[in-house]
Image 1 (tube, helix red, strand yellow):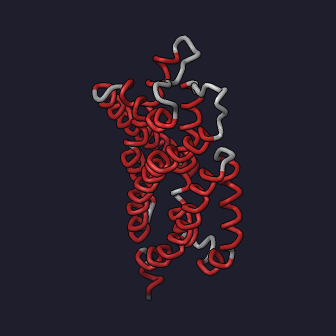
Image 2: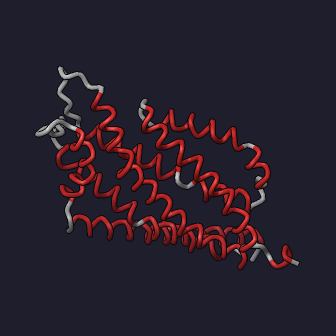
Length: 251
């Protein structure tokens, strides 16, 4: 077998392995989604998601659906989103299983903790957004609504807003993982990251101003955790680098 044919065969085997991992990840999401459909059900899932908004509305007020099929489709989308979030550890594990065969033993010691921490941090970011940010943001916005306006949010617009906010906070909480990877791969030194701390703080507030609504509460709620998580990454990155050092690096 020629070298070109061997390389092509290896490439095809990698594609097959990637396909299998994607199928397994999709099956995990489908199982989580089916479980949520059975209990508590899409309607209850959406009611839980809408609870922070409903709590900020006047007594007796409800959200509205302007589309004919919106009352059916929106709860389905919310259930699928929640199923994806709950199955993130399984999805990240499939990613780790795909790349693990090509890693050295000392590199594998880094990947598994990062997979676990990435899942927990993303879920933690979404939970922080739901339990802490939404209630305060909706209450803050509701206080500025004139009494002549009936605040009746559309469920599709609300879903788009919630999805963008949850993804923004989930991605933001991955900052320590990004710092650890940059330091361990030797792309940026820990000293350089400490030196650019002031620029990172400014960048955090700029990102928060872009991805959040134009109110101070949500912007601070995103920018401050981003800065704190950056500092956490600076503290943890040297420990990960020592734990995953190759044998020749410790000699």
